[in-house]
Image (cartoon, rainbow, N blue to C red; front, side, top):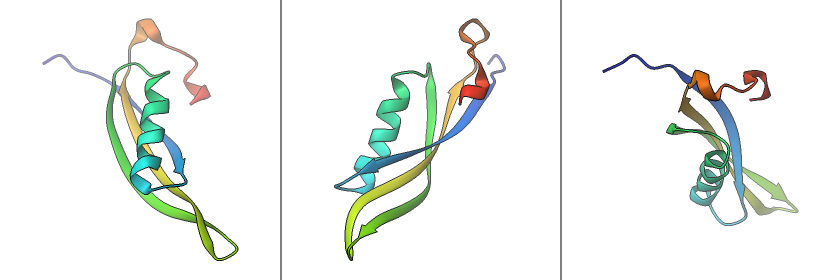
Length: 78
């Protein structure tokens, strides 16, 4: 197997319905601009509370994607 390099970024997905949907939102959005997304790891779950009621679910994610020199962007954007 050839050696590979992966970039890891952290994103936060949000949802008014569930943590699962919040995580899915983060992955779905990332897939629109990242090539070869490989691993998505939920690292933290939290809630936004307003007036004593849960108004949003948040999933903090670490996402890794394969580095491709031919597709290199300015990595400081991430």
